[in-house]
Image 1 (tube, helix red, strand yellow):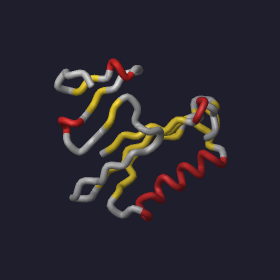
Image 2: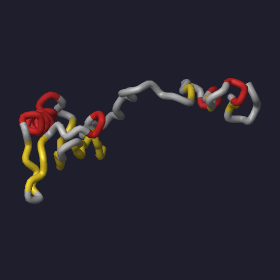
Image 3: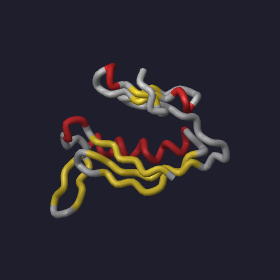
Image 4: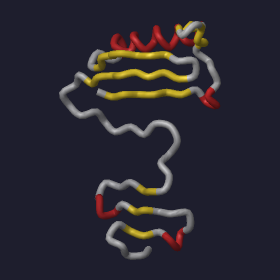
Length: 109
């Protein structure tokens, strides 16, 4: 199971507003709600559990029903500060300047 939080850029309230303690969805909020539950139709091995839409973000829990492990996907901004390779011994921790770069075994590069 995966707990996911997605926030609007700039924390702008795009999904509706709260009135008297109740979330009032606008068109964008209703669209998020509709497509969230439609994910199960598109991906039969996923189950959409609870979901909460707030004015500028939403939370959800998605369960992977597949028996095989999911492939690793890189989503969003590229990884920064490290290089990821197949061999663990080749992982490198990189800092802001090249002269501070150091491999995991402590030797300087």
